Length: 172
Image 1 (cartoon, rainbow, N blue to C red):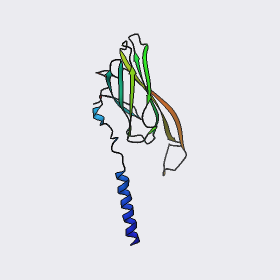
Image 2 (cartoon, helix red, strand yellow):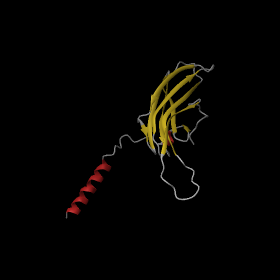
Image 3 (cartoon, rainbow, N blue to C red):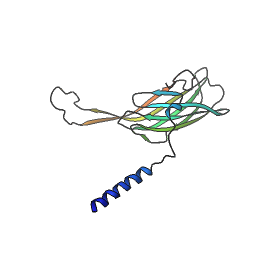
């Protein structure tokens, strides 16, 4: 009787936990984004829209599809560049979440106030990532031995040139 009661309580708690999941903030499907850039740690997908005159909005999602290590403190910057390669406008922002765990997505939005002299918009992004490797990873023969794991935290910095181009960085 006590076991059955405990089992019922466990099932009720599990159902309540599933029902408490926030479905109101359902993420935008990735196939709605026009642009895509990826590296070995992270995939960015975004759209460039002009909500009003003098404003360019870069809105998208950052995705950690395969890394066991979390992507941390992802910061983005949209930079307007004129025909001589000079910066005309810039805006900085962050993704919603401090860390992006394996197979999680985090949205971002950047509103760039343009001057009208821009010929392209570059998207810069950087994040912290713990690179892991094993000391003594070379095994000649015999069973694997648990050894020390070393971590190196690095800031990875990347740039997507002409991020809003109608012909480049297209999601396929």
